Structures are given as structure tokens and as C-alpha cells.
Image (cartoon, rainbow, N blue to C red; front, side, top):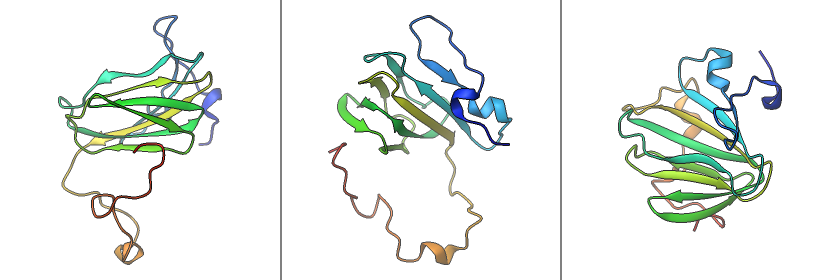
Length: 142
């Protein structure tokens, strides 16, 4: 199954809401949640202020187009296309607002567990650092 995000069904609950593309629902995925949010105007809220304490989910947000301002535990961080925001602590408060029309955020989430079982062989990751081991360069989120 292959589809462009903009060709998927969209949900708009209220006129002031961004375009919401329910990717997980459309494809019937069961391993994780995934949605795309597209701003119809600058200043539009893309990710409402929330945490995932109740669901115990980890979430990753990827800005695929435009620019967004993430607020993470009260601190603002500007993120342009290509930026990844990974939130491993479900109690972290998060929100995002579009800084320009067309800003698109891909949101991926799943229940926190002890370890992700990858189909890749473990030797592929030998010597590859993890964020918890070293701080990667982050010009947009420092």
C-alpha cells in the first residue's frame, strides 16, 4: 500500500483545526500510531498541549515541511523541516505551533516497553551512538 499524505482522508473536527491525516487508521496499522498534521496558516496549533502519562506512550515528531515551534515542558524550541523531536518520557508536556502555512508534522507513537525488537541484526548498530550516550548536534533545538 502506497499513498501520498495529501491523498489520504483528512479529519477536521473544528474549522480552526489543522488538516489531520490519520495514517494509522487508514492503513490499519496495529504496532504503533502515526498521524500527519498540516497547518492551513501560520500560528495554527498542530500538536495540542498534552502528555502521554495516561497511555505510557513514547512519541516522535518529524517536521517534514515548513517550521514549527515546539513547547516541551515549558521551553520553546524552533524546528525546521528535517528536525526530529523524540520524547521517551511519557510525562513530558508537549505542544507545537506552525510558524508558516503548510508546516507538516508527522507524529509517531507507541506504548513504552522494555526494548524494541528490531528485525535488523544487532551488529548493524555496533559503534553507533544513541542520544542518551552523547548529545548529537542540534542547531534548531539547543
